Image (cartoon, rainbow, N blue to C red):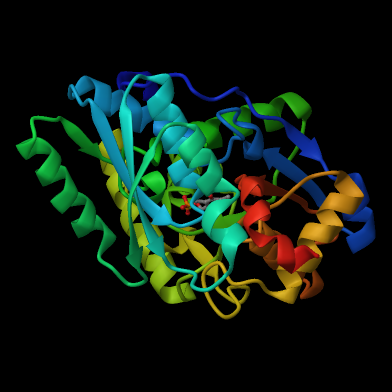
Length: 332
Ligand SMILES: *Cc1c(COP(=O)(O)O)cnc(C)c1O
């Protein structure tokens, strides 16, 4: 693999720490838990989209864009990180937000990521009803901007395409390097999966180096089967983009959708408990939409005996704690 062939801007304060979570591990009675701190990627509160944006913003600049367009749910962490990355590189940023979570109150609509989108100078162009074809809405808007003489670059939701997923191929390599330095045998990787770029990049990166570490994505939205198919499609596209010549087996993609609850962005008691535990035992802030459900999944799998007592399990913290401010009542 030769990642330096791809245009990249530097946004990540990396490598992000790979740390043990001794108090949470002891509380749960094993396995030994570690956390990859991708909440600490450094860009305007950090999170996993920053790694993807290193490649996406570089591509936008190479194509001569002067404005980026992206989309997400109202409390999108991706929208906030895109706003920051665009600001840093002198690009305008236009956001289309989907009301995927309805009637959640004033904090959800205005605080957290929404407040920071505005602070970072992005324009919230529209707030569209749940179920809108957001990709089409972005393309229509890009067309309007082109007609007005602008050069828009459309970033898909979550930054999840073969370009963005390269950010998590980089993370896989980084984590393998750290595990070697630490003398740490990683037996499992677990993280929250949504728009699929994180898992697709990790799986592709781990497979490219023949590491055979299983990755479990805890779905925050789609049912298991659909999520696995979506991730695998992006694994194949990413491997192709990288110029890999061997096929990555379908079995390398595993998702669990038992922790979604009533739907995307809707709180579950397990999520609230996982966030409280991690805050109070490790001083680490998770988020209500993604990493909180991801940690609820990890805890649930531990309780079901999914891991060996002596396994080393790495939880990838994908960020998002800014979103907590949209959910004040959930934690009151
Ligand atoms: C977007 C996001 C995820 C999911 O990552 P995908 O690459 O979209 O699957 C997980 N956690 C947080 C905090 C996110 O913002």
